[in-house]
Length: 248
Length: 116
Image 1 (cartoon, rainbow over the protein chains, first blue to last red):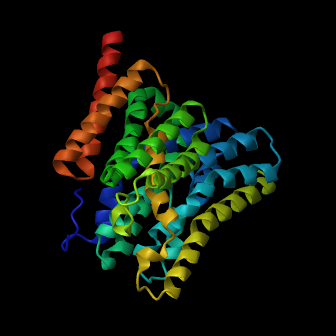
Image 2: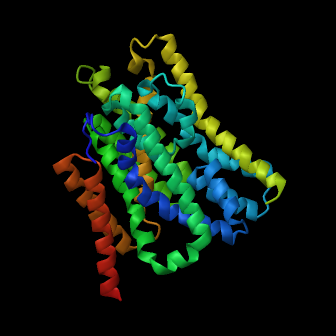
Image 3: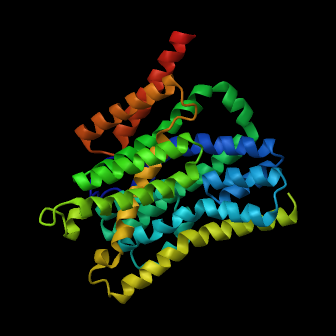
């Protein structure tokens, strides 16, 4: 599971699946919780599983079943669910330069979650063009299947699982911050990037500690971009990095 | 689940898919118009900066423990340090995460045993 560029003997989809394994540490425990919470909110196993299959967006699904169980108006339910997912808008364009001409790409965008984006944004530029579709399909499919299967498992046996292995549910989700850390580290290439990234991380943590997780992601990222531009404005003109190359 | 609620599920599913798809189609059209001559420069600069910032924000959000007590913060700190050390040595994707989760889990387990 290294970040080697060339692996002619390994099929690209298999490489993608292997590299998506860390996602499972975050997906499966959360999916099990979702299945369990859905049952408690009055949904059946099939309903919970289909919601995961079709909507496939973690936080917004919890909101959806919570609001539905509370009898919220449908238009509000739909609006709030979509509002939480609006941040996904910036993911596709950021991957576009590395996508091939295949007609499969639009369909595969159903699998473009936060975590799959973070992984793909780092790995796609390192892969050869011929490997990218296979790699992304493998990674996105494994993540999707694990989310749907985890939901079904949680709906059927969530209570029992949580009682049997309470520690596992507590420990495995650390795979997500560890994954994001590994993905973000190569971006600390200059003082300018470092300042903007650290500010983003600090704001995101502050928002989460104040129960503003979903607002926190776009807000923190927006502040990071602003910081990136402000640091440039604050630098001496002859010392400021101006070429595009300095951004990467 | 009522038919109306199913309709809401379908609307949310379609809406989420379109949120993920339409900006990509817009960007691909923009790239095609430039004939692929310089695809990276075709992306607005703020957008290319926003990508890494989103990953940093996801890191920040996921770093906060679900029950932010002293034990969880200590485990988080040591897990991050272990992840960083292995990443610096290997520059790989899998091993740093295994080291991070292993360290995080060990600290939680150890503290549980000490307290229990």
